[in-house]
Image (cartoon, rainbow over all chains, first blue to last red; front, side, top):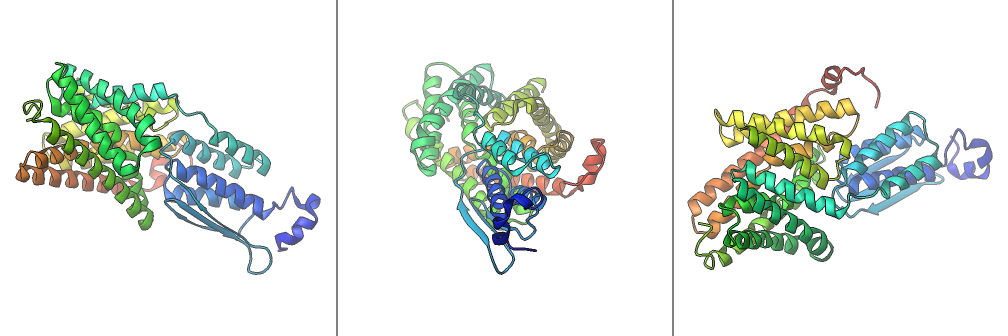
Length: 275
Length: 147
């Protein structure tokens, strides 16, 4: 097998059969990056990168993936080597992008894409529009109301939880997400939920303060980190699983501290309404 | 009970929106979340909270894998929203609440239950992911193919 340095000297002859190693690896890394930053499990990132590399004929590729790093190398001992490390900040979960990349990699493996087209498709996925903020806020409110009902609240409680659920997502999108650290953001979120529910309760909306708070704090709960952590650990990716689990636990604890602080400060003011 | 299940469906779909699940999969997420809660409620009559969570998680994961095979997309899409009602958010709340109100025995009790529920969810996920992929392919009526 010729090294890719030699391939580059005669590109016109080989491009249709043998692809440029660097380009393939770059494509695979971009796919992996998209998956990882949008909340995919480690083994899915590995599998997808593997599938892309293998289809485009880079047999020597190997990659090492942690929850926010991708390391990939390719090359045969001497000659040209590809090696790259990339840090990937996790930016919340966009499962539609995970699904799209997954689908794309299957289509690549079926031979439906040239490298150029695949790269364009990946760019398209990266710029897939998010759901409008108004829809997210609405969904958060409705889900909070529904959760309040699940945990035993009555109709008025659900209404109050829905209002608090709207407001907490406004807080997440505009205050804690862009401006606050994870710890302060979640402690603040827990306290914020408690405050709003107390205000609503004092205004006469809702009868069970506890259920209102439980329902409306659900949008803060780190369900994705928790679930993906378990899946990683179950697949044997212990380091990523552990780190993600610590991440989830930290958020759980922060919410609890926030809610606890809220109750401790407010319950004397509301005459022990939460008791 | 009917109202509770409808609420579970709505809550699950709501969270699917927040996690960016493609909108064509909302019905599946809703059904999976509702089924999980139904099993949870039924199991709760006989078993502890943790036991019921285990049963419900197993059902949620089973259905999620089935849907994933049927729709050829990552299982995460279905299972994260579906499992959300089971995650011990309420347990965390009560623990914090009892700690703040100086009811330490109750705090320890609810905190311990929350941990047990979390472990039950872990076991449920691990058990069902251990089932061979071929079983789901067969159930979904698909021929085995190379991924």
